[in-house]
Amino acid sequence: MDVVEKVESKMGFAPRIMKLITQLDPKSKEFYEFCESIIQEDGALPAKFKLLLVMAIGAQKHCKECVVSALKGAINHGATREELIETIRVIFVTGGSQAVSACREAIEELIEE
Image (tube, rainbow, N blue to C red; front, top):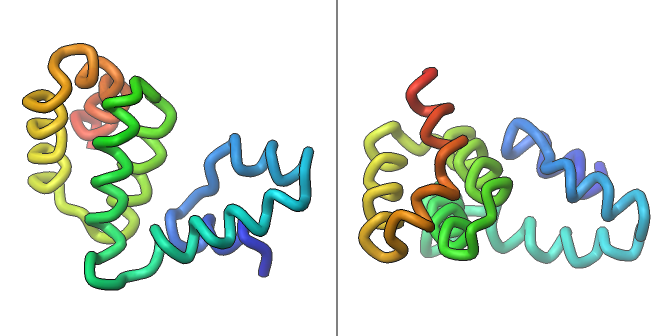
């Protein structure tokens, strides 16, 4: 199983950018393997919390796709609606309205659930 398939099995999908980069540069799969092993595996922090951190960092960087991907991954790893809402609150407190605006699509997904 390659890294894209591993990510799909753990998150329920693989980010489109991952598919494109690994198609363009197969050597990038090694980097994704390393990232996948750090984020997608439970350690001192459960994977769902790591993905909530990724979500918050993505929001601070104003990366909408990062926020949505991390949200979907966190849900797939068992994050609750309450944990997601609290993460968005933390994003709002630490990054203000600009960071929260990066969460718009993620918030829409939560509302639609």
